[in-house]
Length: 249
Image (cartoon, rainbow, N blue to C red; front, side, top):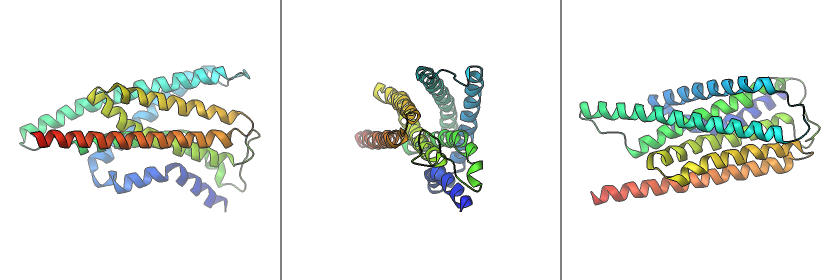
């Protein structure tokens, strides 16, 4: 039964990512390479970040402000890395468009750009799940489960899987929003991504309060739903605007 539970936790954390990969990404080799490169890119950045914070951990203070500082600096670093990833993508896009012009083939369509952003975000989400969930699941395949004193309502591995699920979805679709914001210069999109990221990260501190997971996990789910809704509206607006420009031309 514990083997089944361990597999179940892993599927909770990575199930939606796996579904997106199989149904959308796997059909195009270039998107598969984008996912792999993004995953490696974000894993390296997380390793660098964890190495920098290794000198200050474990936090011995009982106050919550050191954790807030840790989360704010971590989110800030990851958002800078996201911007760097975008700039690398833009260089690649320019190369692909130049190659298309030389070979008399069409440039990247809007849907292609959105799928590339989705693949980049999926790599980030998978990296987060590997780093913060799958690396902790080995004991889940043992003979028992594990509870923490501050949240005895749910197994620790289940909480970890649900949190990783939420962040993987937020990271995946935040990349689509961020890429659109950078491409169009829309400040609302550029601001939304780090804001929802820091809010979701701060919400995890609620789990440090006794029985806080009962509140923190649903709040993280709400942040995930807000991200999905914002991304859906943004994509529909972008497609509508693009269709209008093509009609006028």
